[in-house]
Image (cartoon, rainbow, N blue to C red; front, side, top):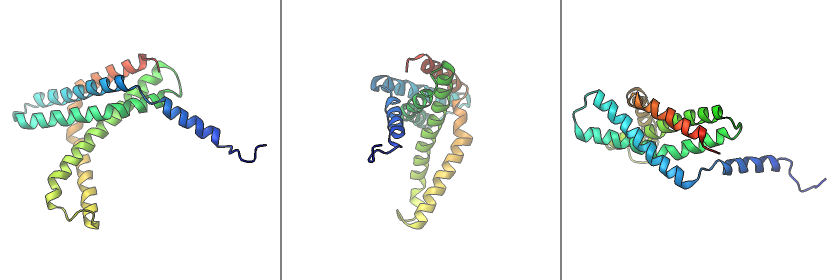
Length: 177
């Protein structure tokens, strides 16, 4: 028996290898991020039009928020889907992995961007940065923004977002991994 060998090394090496293998190629990821960002923005735009919004500046701001959220979320969602789908190589598993990963990362990224914008607005009433009170205000402001986005923002993904999610998940399930 080799005295210097660590029995956990092969398992950690396998995990590191799986994590590396899940990294998606750059060009399809960039193209997918642009497409997913546009799809997320169009979903929000259609929701705003259905709600009969009439303020062009606010419509542009919400469209850009959702588009940027989709753009930022796609690489993370694709990586997570590839990581989850590599454990079982079936189309159903790949579809489910993409569906869940893209849903969670898109909502999380867009909510985080919304929370940062929300925080920027309320910063004028917060204490000096990095004090104990400031941290409490920061956390509570982000929590309020996340709640508000969950209640008001997520509905803008429907009905088109669900169709885009189905299409992206089918695309992922049919791609070789």
